[in-house]
Image (cartoon, rainbow, N blue to C red):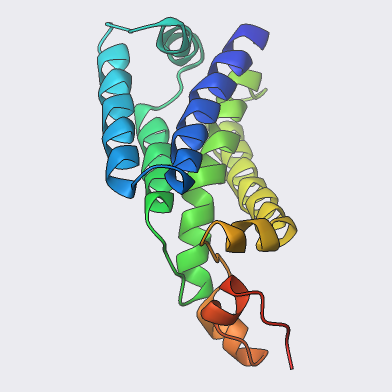
Length: 177
């Protein structure tokens, strides 16, 4: 389980780090790197891993029955950070959180295992995905300033408006009135 957990961490960390490069590289360059990473994932899942991260990821996927769509969902979420994005509503932000964090919870649940049958597994995955959203929201709240300095604001515009703020005010560090 430790080996598989390390593999998942490495896969996710590299994906997140590719996007974090978007502050020093053009979004097109980052998108190309992510597309290459996605092709490497596809090749690994087809039994042709390229490099240690994908070799170990394939081992984890096979050993713990990690669904491939969850891995792709994570990359879709990470890719959305390549360009400045805004979230108008809570459901939009929730979908983002599911993609970048609930996926991790689901993958980990597969690795950690669940005692019982398919119903228990489904319930555990549901709880893991909800916890992923909670963890991502905590991250968003913790990093508001850092994200703003990097041109990102994850707070839903309708919620900001209810407090008399705009996305641009958050990005520019304007204090509430």
